[in-house]
Structure formats: C-alpha cells, structure tokens
Image 1 (cartoon, helix red, strand yellow):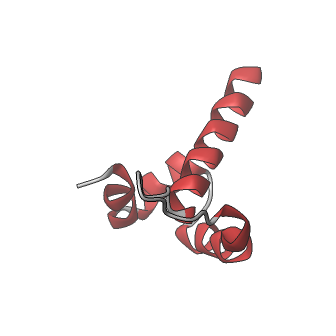
Image 2 (cartoon, rainbow, N blue to C red):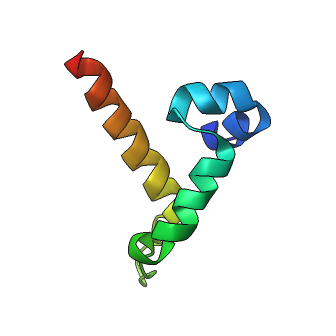
Length: 68
C-alpha cells in the first residue's frame, strides 16, 4: 500500500500531511491536471498528475515549515 492510499483512508492524516482536505486536493488537481500531465515514452511511464501534485505540495510545505 502506498503512502497516498494510507492517507486517503484517514482524513486527519491526509490533512496533516498536505495541510488541506482531500476535497481541496482533488479540486486543485482538477484545475491543474492539464499542466501536470505528461506523456508516457517507450522507456518509462510518466508520473501521474496526482503524484506530481502530492510531491509538489509536500515539498512546498516542508520549505514553509523550515522557514519558521
């Protein structure tokens, strides 16, 4: 089971990890999906928009927390 799947099962952990509700995450994903989507190649599968957004948000949150 991936971390994302574990977080979806527990709304409190999801909120603590991403600092937003699952509904907000999905709304943001819907709005940014066309910009985050990449094409698969013969050598590798692309990272999904959901994974890209999750990594980006987590990185941004870490930067903000470390600035305090």
